Picture 1: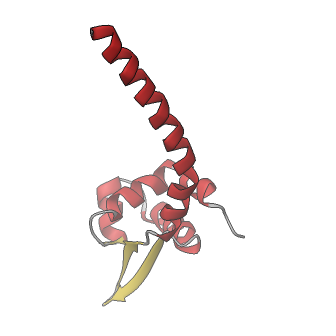
Picture 2: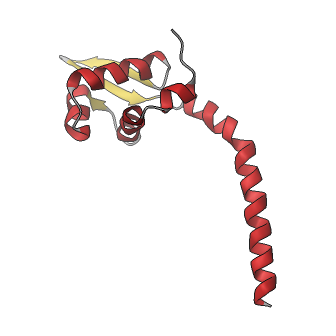
Picture 3: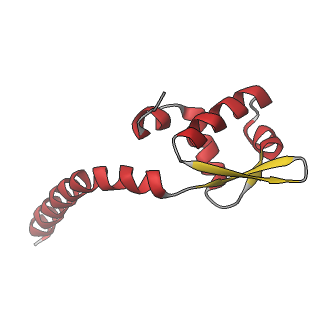
Length: 103
């Protein structure tokens, strides 16, 4: 079953896992310790993230080491871009209005 990026990101634990992987690779055990979530739950979420392309995995000794893949996040960012421009226009207009009030 293929999940879209927004379905994958809708789950708070998956977002927390991505937050952990943003700065460094982590083993499943490290993620369990950092998140305070059971190992089976972390493994389940990692599988969803891996199947959706958000993370990749390598084996080191007896551990699976996970790292963030930015590709799917770029797609989300691309979808958000027009909304960001909309907000930027509104914020620019607000700034101009406030500046005119000061004068």
